[in-house]
Image 1 (cartoon, rainbow, N blue to C red):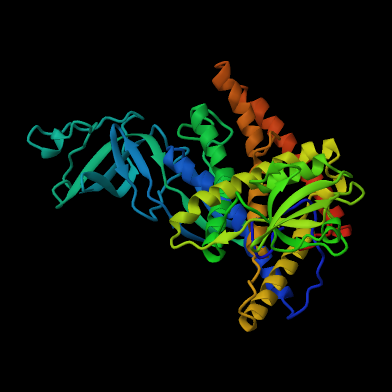
Image 2 (cartoon, helix red, strand yellow; image 1 turned 180 degrees about the horizontal axis):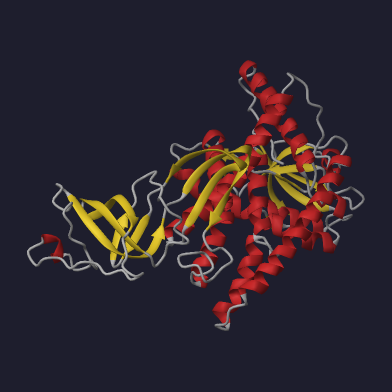
Length: 486
């Protein structure tokens, strides 16, 4: 994980420091809870926004998990009475269950506001022998000019100023999304209408496959965009890295690099005769020359120095073959706009490194225990370290103006939100990626997998996933992953 000059990457190792300073355990725990809850809430917010934009009804958007504490508000909904669409005011609760009231006759009053009918009152209409027969409008009634109305009913109450009386069959009811606050503050959830039932009009399962995929992708996309946003904030604070220049950000004591005479702050110009323009390229050269001497051309101040160093295969991934921490020099920015492109590039680089981990494990470049997944306790311990180190560095920087404060907490947030986004895209039943996988045949072969079968697979997938997570979390509490900051 990078130190004061992110984004950094070792060749590859980190040096272990002991954390001194104030007790920041409570602050670290609070940050962990807020970050964990925010990541889940942002993920669900992505699904919610996409569903609303694509006209898929969301019955409830919950902040936290049930039991419910209170309803914050109900969004505006709509009713379709005959051919006339009415808008439901904010926080309006229908006096009947919309799910069981479709195709029943209703009578409503509405106000015309900016060319739209806004509901005032509604009730089931009177019927005669079970058959609804609305009255016809007189020809002189101005409401009869509404070409989309079907039918509007005239009554003795109609002359009320500004009031329009609408009667007809209730063909569609969208009561509006309830936004609720719940007791367990660990994220959020969406209750999307007809999520697994394609017979429900206006629901998720009844939407086109492209719309369903867009809604499913929106959650992970929000997590990745959050990483871009945090990178933007970070780069605006410390400067934008020049990714075409590679510097030695730190050295491990007694490492091959230190023994060869490499110093912190050296700029790597060439390695093994090849010009170096990225950290990843230098890392590849180091891995290709294990136990072989590599000639390095370094820029140190006004001098250009030639050094030979031998990366050792006997050193672990955490130690690093050469024992150096690589980074990029930073340049300050004058506006947020300048940080946008580097932030997307840095997020893409982080995603690529994460996706490359399985291949590196198979190739033996990384030992499986070094790529072990971190569970809640491990992440809790990580935030204890990052917050403590960041607080300590800011206390030191306030006294020593020449020292830059660290930003480990922001980097941990970036790493976690990217991991969450990528994890949800994996083709595993019950996850977003698994649901997308079940939607693809509908696009490719024009045939839909039976919703009942899909629901069973996802249900079994949830049980298996929860069992594995339970086992993994218990194991994490027994043997948490040790994460050491540089």
